[in-house]
Image 1 (cartoon, rainbow, N blue to C red):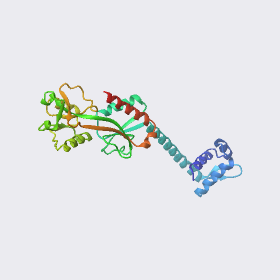
Image 2: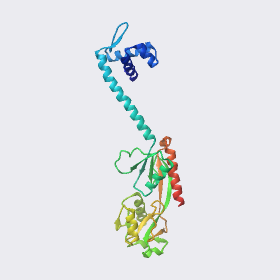
Image 3: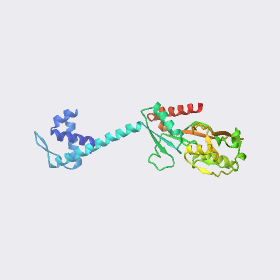
Image 4: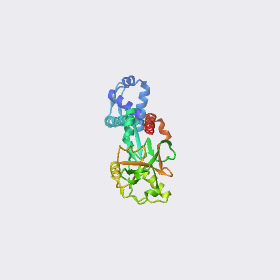
Length: 289
């Protein structure tokens, strides 16, 4: 039993005329008659009462017609819904991030400016979400195995102190100068991991005095000389803070990388190339700033 047979049956049941239905469907009368007969054989029942001049639905045919017509309407609706969802998916791009970042709203704004018809969805790595296994791009601090990985940013991480701190007179600061200083850090994140690993390799243990996920709070505490902090040179877009001084680490500069990562197979998806180019353009401009 095939869907085409069922559609043919519905048409014949409506007209109860093989010749008329065959013309409507643009098929031959013998082919249509054969399809109806095969359907009856598959079901093991006759659906029509036949004589030389008429074709009428019998009781079982009327029941089958009523139920199958409803079933086919549901199938047709399901096909339409699936096609609409496919169209939505073609316009949708999922961005996955390891942690929230001040850059994300700006990146989304830039993408929408360049590719206004695209729908942006966000997924956060490490949170339970239906999106976790389905994403177009991921922003990562390391190359992801099996993916295409494009280096977006290779930025320095700077030491941030209050302009009232004695460290504000230095353009470079070494780890010994940080001993016994109160340190303010973000909650655990890939960036914090890079900073802690840098200190760990230098046999210097970090014990934060205060931890916050709010960057404005972090900037405010540093500017009030409550402690020192660590600020990425580009990606945090720190507002103008006259009371914050930025210095470089010495002798080794502390840096972190940011990659755009995606499965190679996704390059064929609609809008993928346009969105990728918009992201690359954003970071190209960010690198110049």
